[in-house]
Image 1: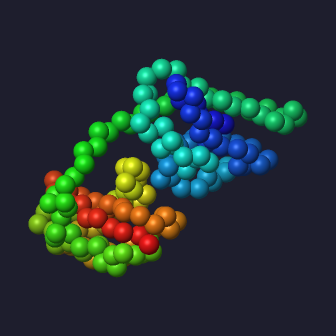
Image 2 (image 1 turned 90 degrees about the horizontal axis):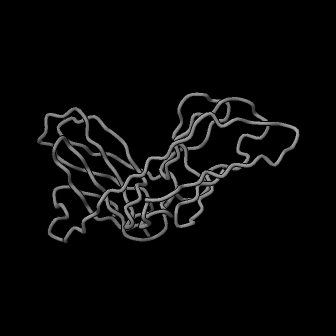
Length: 183
């Protein structure tokens, strides 16, 4: 199964991942998604085989095509429904003085394992931590209890390539960003 943009960019979503498993799949594809669980009929957010951020920068207007083919002649399948949601956030470059000093990312540079420290002034129950690459692709998102702040070890599941990344912390209405380098 492949998704084709109006400009002709092709991203492979799925290819014989479930083998001979019969059943219904209810899937949402997201570059930050997890692994597919075959035979699980509940809604799953899974990573596609290709990279959906390949569509970044393209005009989303026009006809999108979902291509499906079954290479086995002795069986059949049915697509019950399909839809596409296009997220087009606008990104604004942040200057060096906007990068927060009170959000601390230790082990910087690191290899994908680091600690986030922050003292909260919010009454919110949760603090969210996100990690983004320079293109804006989200690599990590997790919620943690707010106990007057946070000192949380974070391990990115797949070590990203070396480069500059941004750690964003959301505490109620407060949003803090720190630059991080992965070696």
